[in-house]
Image (cartoon, rainbow, N blue to C red; front, side, top):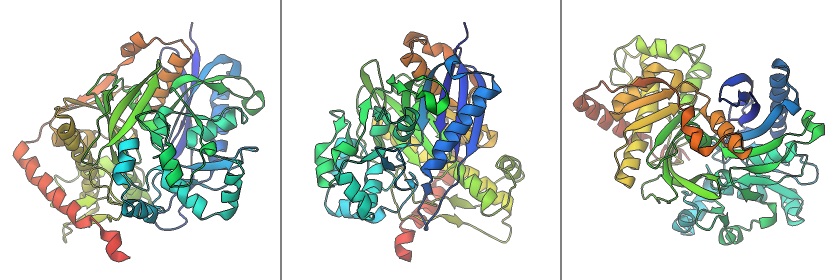
Length: 498
């Protein structure tokens, strides 16, 4: 009998509600764009009330479109933009500040303070993360420093902190469930990935009360039941998982050494390392992939802050394309970039540089440069940045990666994926279901609801197309060296401008 599972995929630019049937087929997708708020240069916020409303709207439209009632839904899975920080009133669920988005760089001076205190290794060894504004801790410190009323409410125990999953869970259950999962907790820079607890030493060093933090559970487990008054029925919520870990699971990268890349706003490359933690010395993050069947699995992660977002900038900023889909045709109209390189360090650079002061750069412009050259250089910048991360992964693990599985909006761009296969000199596989983030949450929710068996997961693998390398190594090596040179000129730029 066909059953239905509902996934809330709350991303950086859109909220999606996707209804799957129990065979893993998509029955309906409903999405709503989110307004991006930029109060100052380098600052990025979302309105939590708008996030919540977008969830309610997309759920209702999805159910109505399929003529379903809440009682027809077996379970709900939630996957979310990670690190984005929301602080809310525990009594009312009302947000006490705009969400500070993962891209936001407002806490860069706090990160400098932490580094100056010599705490980088201390934090890395406990959390697997590097000290960067990307993660939730320094966003939370900024909030508490800059809002005295909020600090007072925190001291009275009236405040809840959460990443987006926690906030949505709290709202859906009308305040009855205040939890997160291991994958999201591991992105806050407050969670000890060794003992799997909120780290008391970190909390004490930064004066963070433990009572504002949610409970931490397995990614596939029972998180609560939706309140009847909220969406018209009671549905069990059986998975919470950060979006990139959800994508790793959705790509069925269940064995050690398997790697995926999601080309979204940024690019996030994850390698499954199984039950063992691999601590990087070269800018990779050690993170929890998921908790399932009472076991915790780990991953190595490389973070590229700007990938698909560079296409959005060409559309909305430079206005050289009218839609994101146009970039491939425009880029194919030239044979090469003609020596042009584009380093999209709009919010600094992630792996392997972790330079929050890097500046965006287009170099090699001549009188012959056209918008087509810029478009092609933008596509290549995504593939070059991924190559840098894969290089570090191979060096850290001493393993040659044989296949890269890809997903995300930009993976529809065939030129990008061919470039990626060429630059990595390996096969790149694109699945038939590109909604792999939601698909991972669906699988975890199905496991949590006991309608999917772990041993049957591999039956869900379906490949759409394989891209094979076709570029001579000598030609690529020359271009890669030039890319590295371009990046070196972007490093530290914002600090120079201060």
